[in-house]
Length: 263
Ligand code: FES
Image 1 (cartoon, rainbow, N blue to C red):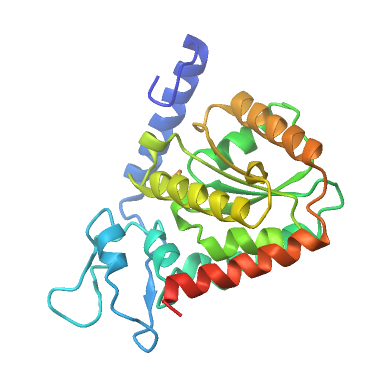
Image 2 (cartoon, rainbow, N blue to C red):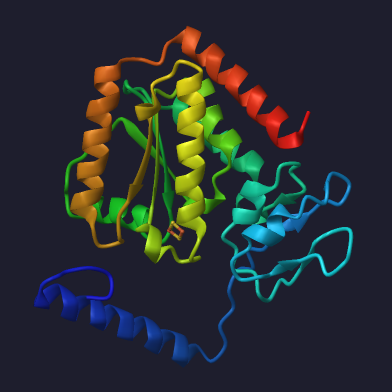
């Protein structure tokens, strides 16, 4: 029941799986994990301290210094600091902003189905639910191309707007239930960011329903498929974003960048 409601057979199967994973870890003696911690470029840092405010495990502190002091042992690698950094001084080497943008462009370009939707799924819940939907043969529309992110909090404004500017008709940001985010605040940041972007899109004459924020737990494959299905239906009714709208997205992106940098 820790993941969500399930029957006795599923509960027993999941408990067995969890126990065997723990057993494997204990048997190995040493555990080596990939360090996914932010990189920092002081040449472009503007000392805005946003990273310090946003870092939930308090891994980033200024301590009267000009630049952030990053406690790599405390960092959990969610990427929320990189997403919030207005100057690009912080990045996440295991999923850089450049990689996110390239993956976004490829997802739009390689999607032969229209309307084309880019889905950003957190690795802990939404991506697993999507995977589970696939292995359980739960059908959902092929319009969505999924990109895995460590947490929805990793998604910056530029990435979402780039998806639209590249020709996506809709963008889905899907993660854990907000209160269940594995990094505590990432999903909350992502929800608030998507709300702000939705308002900006509407201000530019683009229907805000093209940007969807969804939440599922890892076991909710049905709900994942249902949410994608509903979103695809909404975007299908709205029709293609259109070339003139892409121009507006590009202008919104420039305005957003200017606002964040104070330029
Ligand atoms: Fe899933 Fe943060 S880890 S949304």
